[in-house]
Image (cartoon, rainbow, N blue to C red; front, side):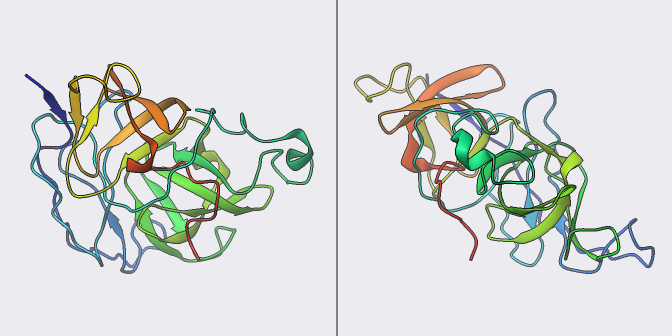
Length: 229
């Protein structure tokens, strides 16, 4: 029997702006799922201005919608695939653009690089893959899988690489790259997974201890080109 990995259900979540500057922010906000995954299993993102209830799946793991191109031939951590010459030209010493993941379950996304700028939404998605497209010493401008652009503090991002399943149907996970056998598991639509490595158009990912290979083109968080315009 093939296991399907993902979330049982998502919630749209009403916007709840607050008068206090950082205890709540004006709409739009990013809302969380009811079920919070534990340990290394990331939680979900849901944008209240584009509500989408998500997909019905079997296990309580993480999920989120997005569209992305795939291209990867190596790194599962920040900066590993960045040439030394490119690192020397950036504030952080890492390539821009590059992928990171959100480090905490609550991350304020601001209009500019500083706490004096208003928060425009709150991410409640620990482990969400985002692409750094600009940076200052202390702030990172990130593109999320929804196409949203905002600034977050550098302490709120992690070099651990995650990816997200693309499309409206579950994607197969195989024991070896190449799809020469029946899949050992299925990754539900909008699901997040930890990236291990990629080769030859296939990527090895893990979700809550379950490992498998899946086509890179079915994952968001790999393309080297900027994903937000």
